[in-house]
Each structure stands twice: as structure tokens, then as C-alpha cells.
Length: 298
Image 1 (cartoon, rainbow, N blue to C red):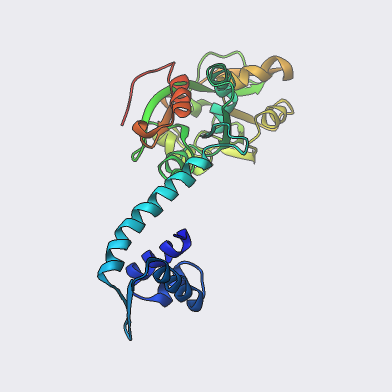
Image 2: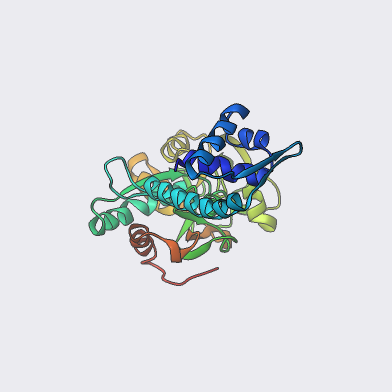
């Protein structure tokens, strides 16, 4: 039996109308009717009773409907399975992470995963932390890495890594060489954005009452190296993850200043939609990403 004909039978019975079923399957009504007629010819019995209000399944049509739905579900499962592989048949995983995790942590973790699954391929997608749990829940990606003050709802999250953000200044800046400071103590200086939580408004919501007023942000720039080069030119100071800042301190002649604020330490999580239904290659990647902190948070 033709899969397209079974799809049309299911649509016609569920919509109780050949016209609506044709619209649902993106066909003209005559083509939809032809598929049903051909299916009835193949099985040798009438499947749909036509009337002015639409269509109703006959007893044979109702019996075939339930079997057809199961067949179509199996076909969809096969199609979903094929999506998980590259054109050459190699397992393909979809991993979403924010920029900080991609730069700081994933190079070493993906190296370790490559030793376990040398033929697997990872499609790495950069996304904002606030969007990543939704991408996992909607099955747009297999695994996500995000940072937040707590585990996101709707997915299963495991602690992944922690990092700290610091102030980065020119080497001759008044704050350079000082001990740890609160961000409030730097509020009188010009700043270069991008901030934790990816927008200035969300950042101000994060820091809450720790600031007595807004920061003076002269330029918003997401690229870490570009931001550090602008800091070197005296355009302002910036907030960067410490491991990333360390890369540029000696290279560009910059200084870092530790922040005493509680929000300066960030918790990263790795999340999946349903651990019980992960493919073996995805399970192996999840284990690699969990190796620093094996606890589970829901």
C-alpha cells in the first residue's frame, strides 16, 4: 500500500472532510479523492462513506485507520532516526552551547569525546543561555549547555562547570593592581558591553541592588578579542570570563581585577530532554560533559 494514500485516509477520517484533509496534506481535492479511490481499489472494499457533510469511515475504514496510524508512526520514527546520521551514515549529534562554554570548555571536552566516538560528528550551535533549554525541549538539539542561577524547567539538567567573570582594564588603569572590588566601585568608569546574560537590561536584572545606578556603556561588542583590543585603546573597561581574559592579558597588555560580587561566579548546566531515550553516541557525549560534576538537578 502507498504511504501517501494511508496518510490521506488518516487525514480524511480525522478531519471528517476530504477537502480539509487535502488542505492538511497540501493537495488539491481531486488528487486527495483519487488517492482514496485507488486505496479502496487495492483493498477491494469501501473505506469512506461520502455525504453532504463530509465523510465517515466504514467499518473497514475504521479498522484500517488504526493500523495505518501505527504504520505512519513507524515511518516517522524511521525518518527521525535517519536525521541523526550524516549522509555517509556516521552518527550526528546536535549540541547547543553559549559562547563562554564554546570558548572555555568545549575544545577539551569534544577532544575527549572524539577519542571515545572517533567517527561521530557534532553540529555545534551557538545560542543564548536563555534559549538553550527550549531548543533541547523542542528537540531542535540533542544536548544543551547553558549558565543560570538554577536548573531550567522542562529538561533534565546536570551541573557542568563553573567560572568567574572579572573586570578587564588597561594596564595603567586606576583599578589595575588593586585587590578584588565590587562592580559598584567601578561604576564611575566607562564600560564596553557585552555582559553576562547577553543584554544590558538582563544584566542589570541579574546584578539587582548591587549597583546604585546604571553603568555608562559606550560600545556594545560581543567578540571577546575585539572587546579586549578596545579596552587596550582606552575606550572603556569590560566584564569577561576569567579564563578568556587570561588569554589576552599578556598578548594585549591588559590587567584583570577580581569581582567580589556573588553573581560573578556562574554555574553552567548540561541538559537533555529525556536521558532514557538518548542514543548511545549522545549518551557518551553527555558522560564526557558531566565528568566534572556528576550530580543531577531537575
